[in-house]
Length: 254
Ligand code: NAP
Image (cartoon, rainbow, N blue to C red; front, side):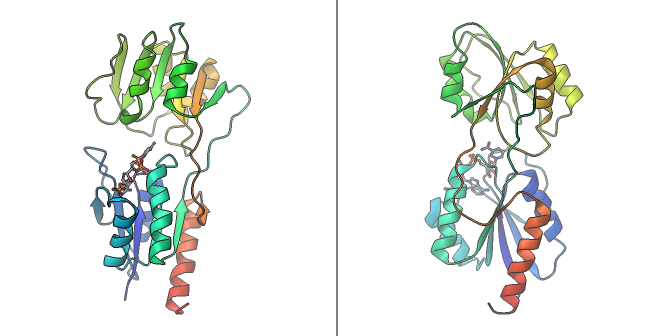
């Protein structure tokens, strides 16, 4: 009998992990996506898309599909699904592990200010007009309508519809990874003086912070949400080792 794994994804690491597990004939791996992106990148294993219907729905899915291991490889700021995953795994009595990228740490020269989220960031921007790069998801930018005196540059994977209700905003489409030279060019071109972003970790979206350091640009960084207690790793390699350990225990009937 194959060992069934459900990976909660929506991240590069989830796709990488799925790619490493895909050739394994002793495993049956499914990747779950929330379905936010209109044209998601191709995945190396079968994909199911859309919410489960809260903790209960996820617990039902785990039972109905006889999932043996749940891997939460969602984005560190996707707090609701991580909380649901921890509860649903406990309710269904199946093991779970988390693959979350380690947070970036500030380096000398970084001008970071930590904020709770978009509402606080919009307040911190103040009244004096700034030129702000919102490196956030489409769903997270509405609070900046409360701070309309600033110019906003918004980069998103899918178009922002409707646009932000502020007098001065520009929209660009882009999907990481982004290189440092391109980010330097972007920040200079739009004369950005403030970046608002999350501490996502990983390499795909770090270049804007390296560029900000060179250009003395202020960064308003959202604090990471608390993640529920669960065996956690930041690396795909270590996640593979943890999965192997689980599979070996299951084969021994532990
Ligand atoms: P969230 O607030 O934690 O989750 C909201 C709801 O979306 C969940 O309750 C769940 O619905 C559904 N959901 C989330 N991830 C899912 C998944 N992998 N598979 C199936 N359903 C999922 O999540 P979010 O912040 O909106 O993020 C949505 C997705 O985008 C996540 O998969 C995440 O990995 C990815 N992502 C998020 C960010 C970010 O900054 N938040 C950045 C990059 C990628 P039900 O309760 O109905 O099950």
